[in-house]
Image 1 (tube, rainbow, N blue to C red):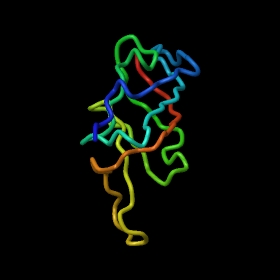
Image 2 (image 1 turned 60 degrees about the vertical axis):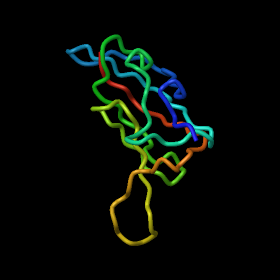
Image 3 (image 1 turned 30 degrees about the horizontal axis):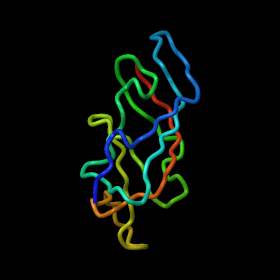
Length: 119
């Protein structure tokens, strides 16, 4: 199967704000990806460049408003690599740490809401 790439991800900027004395942009965004056919790439789902989030230079971070999206997975933004990582429980009720999804996982259509902060 083919892995998801940044071009498969749709980011919609729903609200644009400039906040604080440093004039950082704080944009509310919707991130949509997955079709149940393309798989999870090693290291996470690559996101589009800063301009896709309404920034002109860089993304400092993305805070996911609902990091569980109702599907049982936990989502985390990887600021170093500009990716979303997906974590899942491997065995129910073992009190073990969540593990990152593997390349065998083909995410269904998913929508995440977040706030992108940057310039």
